[in-house]
Amino acid sequence: MGAMIIFLILVFITGLCIGSFLNVVILRTLSEESIVFPASKCPKCQTPLKWWHNIPVLSYLFLRGKCAFCHERISIQYPIVELFTAIIFTLMFMKFGVSIDLVFAWIISSLLIVIAGTDIKEKVVYDLHAYLLAGIGFLYAIIVTCISLYQIQQAGTPFEFTKYIIMNNPITMSLLGILAGIVILEICARAGYLIVGTRAFGEGDTFIAAGLGALLGWKALLVVLGMSVIIQVILFLPIFIKGMIKNKDWKTLITFLVFVLFAITFYALQYYRAITVENIALYTAFAIVLGILGILSCIFIFKGLREHPENRTYMPFGPAMVAAAFIALLL
Image 1 (cartoon, rainbow, N blue to C red):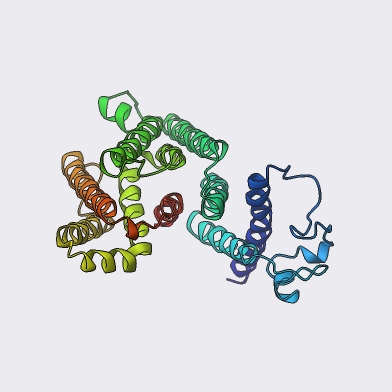
Image 2 (spheres, helix red, strand yellow; image 1 turned 90 degrees about the vertical axis):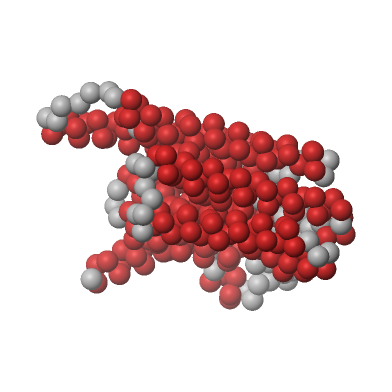
């Protein structure tokens, strides 16, 4: 027990340090600077920082959130990203233990945090980050497949390629996940042209969905996208509900509530193994219904925004997908 606590503390500290580095990646990606040179500096007065100014979280607290030189406020982003990364790293360690899964989970988590960071700060998703997400997800699928084949060979178990294995192995699921992410997000995004005259989502969101599809496979991606919509709308729930009640848009309100209840039911049935991916017909039927309800909710919401432009408030969809991906990875 004592050894495990020490391990958890070490992992948490490692997460804090990685989080500090991710802050650099986020900010210097946006400013188009090298993430290696020059050394850390105050973004306001440009004075190089001492090493004790870079201690994750603690430096922020000791300096009371201000630069030691110019005394300008330091963004709260720094300790938030550091703490969040440390917590995620610790939770991933508790879930996967010391394994190849943990290595990939940490790498993917770091990428997701950077993607969410640039999207929240400047509403920008960089292609390179999304491509890395898809590439690492696909690489993980290849490694998992190779390990499985090796274990089968070592066990001396007879093996033959069947239609089920071809369609349900990690590599195929990853490729289908990439395709599903692109198709679903582009259909939803381009539906915005028909409804409000502009894309519903940015192209970066499509790249994120493709990357998550590569990592999770198309079946899990459907659940993640459903959760993403719920998370996104929950963030705007007060504004949406107020606007729909004010405009007496009961159709949109009822459709959205049905979608949320159905998504929660779908997830609960999977969690308690009442529906499994092996039962492909039932699983697909639930996923299709969830998708239809989600699309209808989006259509009604976009129509409402077109008719009542004063209610428009933009928030990037990428962070909602990242949050849903973390839930999927941990659960």
